[in-house]
Length: 240
Ligand code: FES
Image 1 (cartoon, rainbow, N blue to C red):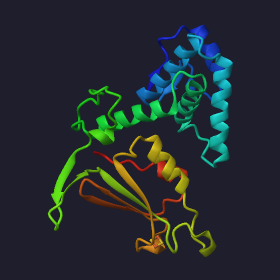
Image 2: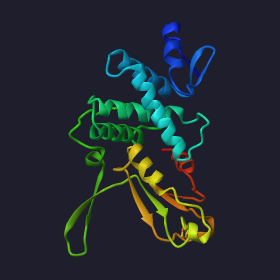
Image 3: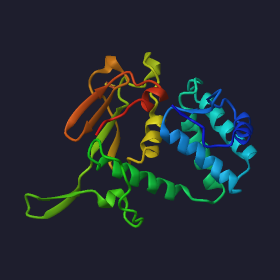
Image 4: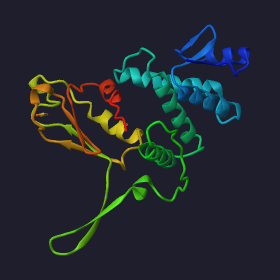
């Protein structure tokens, strides 16, 4: 846990009490991961620089928290900083500090750096060129067709098949609803669109285990079942 020791306590307390459901203890803000502290500091700094007021920030955050509740996500605070980040992205785009395309490009660049950093090494953005997308930088493989024509194909890291066949997602047959929109949303938010194909497929076979997902990743095949909620989708992590 990281505590908020770098902020002047009276000012920090003023900031914190203005925020809905803010995770804190007697020492101030509490962060489960370093990136949460960075996201917190970024909002404080942008507000301090006058890009938005702290009340505008509190309202934007409250909006995201309410949207999460409306989507049926558990209100246990475990995704508080995911909502924080969503509010921050919305506010900086609305205020013209950046735009959605630039945000997406940067996320894809980080995802690309992640996939290509050896395990145990720090992930760094080495190539900051913005004119090449991770897709354009991904490896190519050449092959020759039977008719002699040479083709080049781009190599993907993986393929995600989300089953929407005769049973998966069929609530009319008594199966759980399929969180398909969450798959699409996470696929974009994680910046892996250029690395992973996403296919909404027909029946994959094990209908009784609905909802079924198949992941092919660097030559491995991973089957998942009972992926029934947005939380289930969030919890899918693939190690490099
Ligand atoms: S419909 Fe999904 S496995 Fe058959």
